[in-house]
Amino acid sequence: MGKFLIEVPHGDDTLSCVRAIQIFLTSGSHFLTHAEWGCEDGEHKAWLIVDVDSKELARQILPSSYRAEAKITGLSRFSMEQMDETLRKYHLK
Image 1 (tube, helix red, strand yellow):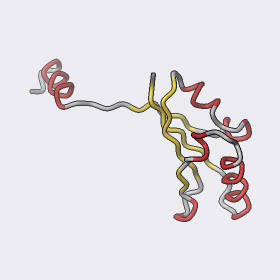
Image 2 (cartoon, rainbow, N blue to C red):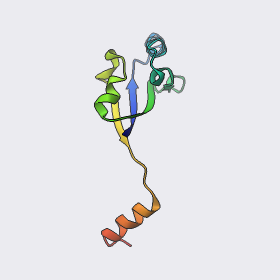
Image 3 (cartoon, one colour):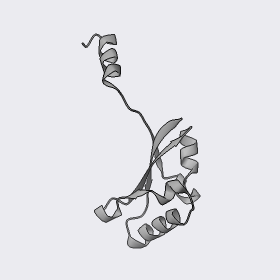
Image 4 (tube, rainbow, N blue to C red):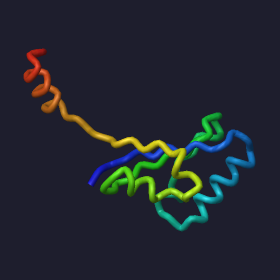
């Protein structure tokens, strides 16, 4: 299973913000009702982090009207051991 950051933009006017938030909150989806919003800081986007099997499944979480504009980014974590191994592999350490 992968971890994905979903970034969903919407219009920068008050009505667009209210509509987007209302659609997310009334969706019934646990993911959508726990979105983080940047509107009050002038960044008219919602963000979610989800654990699903693919980018396409991450996109399917969204209401259909927001899917095309959403940016889906696969997330990774790295350990110091992994970085040390990579540095040794490329003779950088």
